[in-house]
Image 1 (cartoon, rainbow, N blue to C red):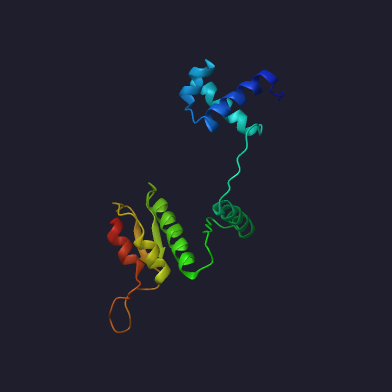
Image 2: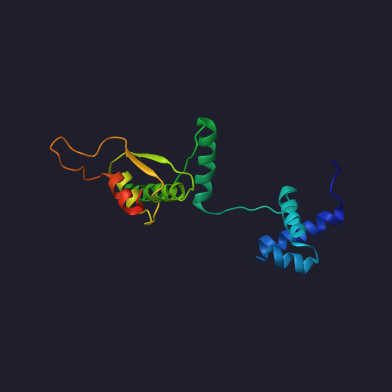
Length: 169
């Protein structure tokens, strides 16, 4: 494979600047550089792959994402989210609930029918309460711990029933 010539890298740099800095669409870039849309797309991709443009995030989420990537690799996890916190128990709880709700929603929006097992407890219930209502009857929800107390009453932190109500799963 031959190396990319300087003129091509110059075009890639222009395309990358237009896309990432100026916020232009690939159609805009194609018109500006007088190339086809697929060529504009390849130029933007070349800009990234050659390291002509880099990004740095100045936000606590960046550290969380780096830690999640390291944990995912080290423990061969399928999914890992880390939530930023100011160190208080309340914000930690809210951050975990929000991250879990986002993961649940992404999972439920999938087109492949799934059987989803849920535990129970305050954190799980708080997560489910943040899920946006949606019609997802193709999925099946299963309680991993049961939901009836020995006295016959429903467990107050039962997340499965609440999620079923929200999603029609």
